[in-house]
Length: 588
Image (cartoon, rainbow, N blue to C red; front, side, top):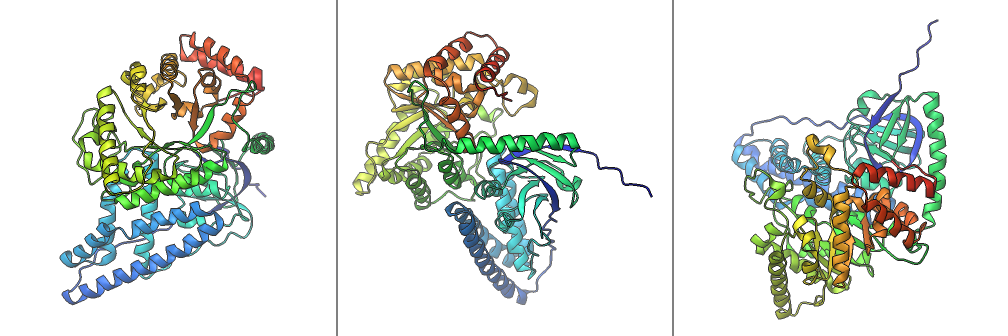
């Protein structure tokens, strides 16, 4: 009798969505497919069709409420808030009105019309080349499928067939599906689609389910029962591993579990060097749902709260009250530690569908950030009003993005003063002494840092844009990707000059770009005397461990030597050697 030959090992690269190393058997989850067909209505059927649509809306609301209750039980407030977002998408008045109007006008079936209306909104979101907003597309699809299913009177089969511990593999997982995962049975999951900031990924981190997303085709390659390794640290999935790969990951899992145990002990300890130098460790947040995770990782404040999500996930400008509630909720959770709210940074590749942006040859260098806000004072004032009202908590600060010259700072501060005056005249409480800072992410601002520091309360270095503008290399362009180095010597020298300029004027200087989350850069940044590093929540324990493992004096010597080097390659080799010598650990 002929034996079946072992399946070939397949290595898949994806996005590390939730950390952990898991080895187990695949449970393949079939996709949720809906079919929408166009159907003409008779005049006397239109009224009933609208009633069916409204009834389906109510049914969907109840279902989302039930899911929200489960999410709150399993995940806490963070999970509850994810389904708040779903309720908002479902109850969007623009989408509902347009659907009803078109049912009447076109005399077409509700599921077909609703599908067309939502597709238009969905396509506008998909144009935004940003992982966060692609994650919101997944939320919209989830709500769309649920409502259409209810219009059609059908029921989706619940997750079933999973009778023992396994790794779930799917094309994608919606928040509705993720919240129903039984942690006692689901060891990990891997998907073709998704990003690090999708709601499913956030929920996975909250539920502590290791996951890798964005593998492109794992659901096509895997079969139920296959052996699968999930490396949620490096974003890898190894299907049908060889014995040697299996042994390698068994060892890695043991090492990871031990390291995680050690890092968890640092959570409540200060980020202080061996000789007593303190550096604040804060978190970068893309949206409110991440705040719980940041606190759990030991963040002492939020160094960058991006606010674009409020504007890009809807079909109209957010109401002032809604915006105020969002900021106030995060401020309350973070208190007494600081919450630095960056004002609206749309434009470039982030354009709301309801605002007409000009055609630009190079939008990244065009009408974005503070430039957009100064030319749209009504929108800017509304956001500032919401931020100022939230500042009654005493821990809120304002951060202005994309500053390139002194005149922009003066104009922005004048508008802030106008909004303050309006609030005072209405006797609405706010922190009259709220601190105002600027992003240093444009070379002209870095060069003028000393003069800019005289006008503000703090500086925050945004290395992502600073690197691409300094090197004149679009970070999204593969043809010049080789120029976007990890530790460019030119940028490190700029950072040193900005820190020195800020401190000369008695101003606090932080950093909120990706470099702050890079362990290879930590010793250099500590040595450059930055006051704060604002990093991705999951990076907090590792960065804190490095800071607590060296003296500030030694870090200064390391940074001085690194700044004398002439190429990024030299600096990276030097820092890897330093890292291995001091910590006996290789760094990728």
